[in-house]
Length: 215
Image 1 (cartoon, rainbow, N blue to C red):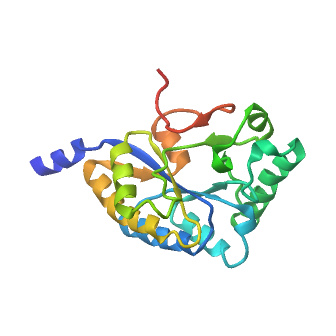
Image 2 (cartoon, rainbow, N blue to C red):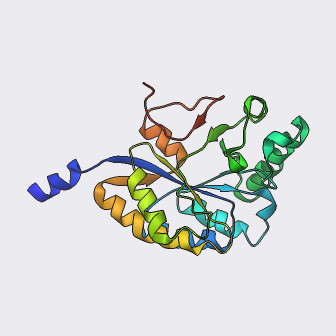
């Protein structure tokens, strides 16, 4: 019984794993790892990547309890677009997600985290950022990526990772980081679940890089 108690007391908090730029074959690799360790996360997809074939990854993600969210249609610098183009970037992607999943996304991540006040006014979704271990850069090794995640793990943290085609190194990063962080007492949840667990209601007009009680 004593060992069980020790296990319970080690709960350190909740982390949201999030992935940009899918769906792709890398999304499937990442889902394999997450399924193996019972982790959930949120996938911020690019609308122009969504088709009958790639949508299978989104559908599998939802079946596993993950979320699919909005990361624009063509991955532009949003602040360089006019109001109509900004709206279209979001609306086309939400429509593509809804077509395959029959649920609308609640969250938005601006490509390159390039955003301004006008974008926050135009896009009717909650903005999400996060900590990124530069896993979009092929020069950053699996070891460096794992170290970035381990060092920045904290209750309420959002990890911003990438599941674009050919980024298998991030799947390998997760294969090492997820069980190590679970051993430390972290649970991996969707962005929605992170807000619920932290008892925080997401608000418009700000970007959440972490979900913690405001000081």
